[in-house]
Amino acid sequence: MKSGIHILPARDECIESFQWLAQEVQQTKGEALIMRVERFEGLADSEIIELFRTARSEEYQEIEAQAIELEKSISSDANMERSSFLETLEKLRKQHSEIARVDFFDCIDGQRLITTLNRLSQALSLSIYTVNIQHTAITEYQNKRWVTRPRPYIDRLACIWLIRRFINSNAEIRYSHEAAPDEVSFEMKDAQFGHCGNLCTFEVMAAAFSLNKPAIQAIGEIVHEIDLRDGQYARPETAGVDALLQGWFIANMSDTELETCGINLFEGLYAVFAKQQREFGN
Picture (spheres, rainbow, N blue to C red):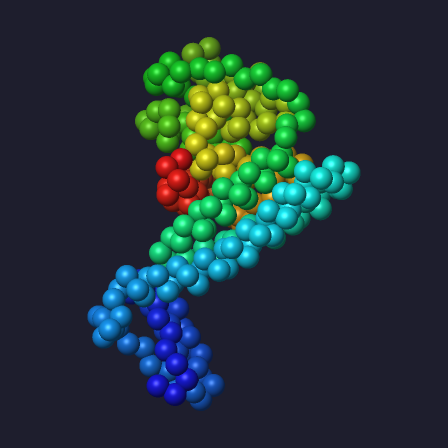
């Protein structure tokens, strides 16, 4: 081979990437050959995997060093504008996401970096208000009917996913501006669950039902920023989720369609965030 060999795992998305790359090379009058290889003589699969992890480890460690410096700055420079810290944190999250996209074998340094970035996010998102949320048992809401306003957007869609995912998968959810006496209202006038202090309804419900998993917290940060736009959280996924929701409304989807799409969206986000935390057993 004149120029070298690039190796990726035999996964659909990797094969597609190679096919596009080969096409681009050929369009510029170059030569490219894609091969499926069962094994390399003298190089075990475990050794190849370790090469992938080593490459990602070096990149993760570089970002982690920057994150640690940011953490020191937060502790020592209380007068610096919080927006500046958030901007730096967002850049670090974006860099992490780019590396994680090609971290095919879950390098442990990536998981450690997630913990560091989440710790930074917590340090920068201390609540402005002291909020006292009464805790309640999920079992008390198993057979409840729920109601919220029509045309559900980010906060209500996230709440609907939370209800169906963790409280009652077969819950009846109605869209109306008025709640019946036997219904549990959320994110509407005089609702049982609504904004509290500087928390959006999703954050309030997650706290009320003691749903404090890191993946739910991550979703809460995205929902909070899109709903309140107060600059409290800086996550790289926020802009994409916001654009997607706006697209659904431009397409004039019905309440039922919005609910279905919203559940799929948040289920996907939850799967990604849960995977990121899995190696730590959180």
